[in-house]
Image (cartoon, rainbow, N blue to C red; front, side, top):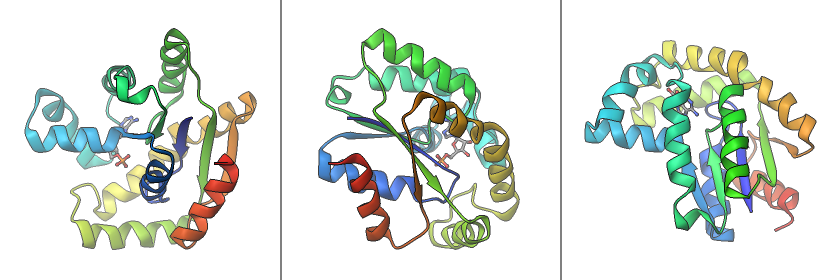
Length: 187
Ligand code: AMP
């Protein structure tokens, strides 16, 4: 099963992805995690991405599209994967369609984690204190939400149009949300 987890930063995509990965034995592909690892290791990719990430801006499309293309061609993804945090722009969504059709595969469901924005902001601020991520400062958080509305929200309509969008309210109890995800996937 191939899935996209869509939703603003802080909506619980990563947490829910880990639960599904455990249950179904598929792979989580998080562009945010891949980029953070690159920054930490000081690779060329990391050097390119860091300033965008710290500001809460999107890393350029061609960079993340390249990352995804390489990653989902790996043999471990053939049993299924969850894209967590990708695509985030229409460009990325279109590129993903091309990559998947070349590989002879497709996305089965797009889980859209809907949220209440006020609750989301307080969650992101709490995460900032707990994890100390360099992009979880108030200015960057606000920018990430703005960027989400502008660039990523249009993907909801795009996937609604293709009939694979499934909406779930994302900010409840973790197990409760996990139950809803499971019900939607039927697995
Ligand atoms: P995340 O952990 O998914 O919130 O991602 C953290 C940061 O990594 C984002 O704020 C972006 O700067 C960058 N990033 C992650 N995924 C993408 C993507 N699909 N497109 C562009 N930038 C991304």
